[in-house]
Image (cartoon, rainbow, N blue to C red; front, side):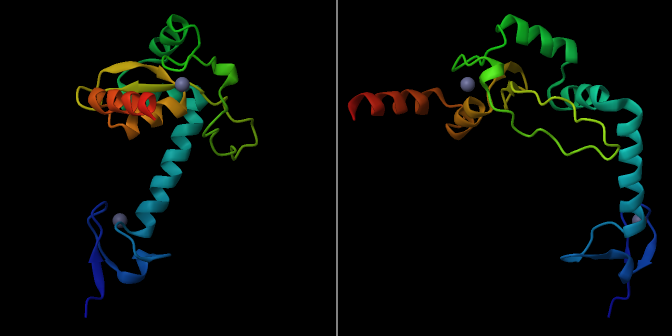
Length: 153
Ligand SMILES: [Zn+2]
Ligand SMILES: [Zn+2]
């Protein structure tokens, strides 16, 4: 019977009870996970909401906060497909309430849409349009078929 398990993070052979999670064994040991939570929280506190957003834009889309704002301006603060103004778009994913009691950063209502194949940023969309083209798997052929279907029915 295996009594210990190797943690891939700290590379220590640890007691199985150090891997006890709510639903079975955790991948990394509890001390490593606790440390990661603290480190992430410290980092968020250090760089602030603006820094977190900048890091997200950079990591996910390779653009800066200035690039995002330039796109918003270029699109007149509207979704590039349905044309809804960002003030009319319901906030989605307003983020978790902050532990320090400060108000959460305002949610961004226009999401960055990028081509999954080339990673190129195409523009900003409301969450609905972004999900819609995702459901059509970014396929022109399928979208045109959907239009033809709507016209014929
Ligand atoms: Zn560990
Ligand atoms: Zn839209």
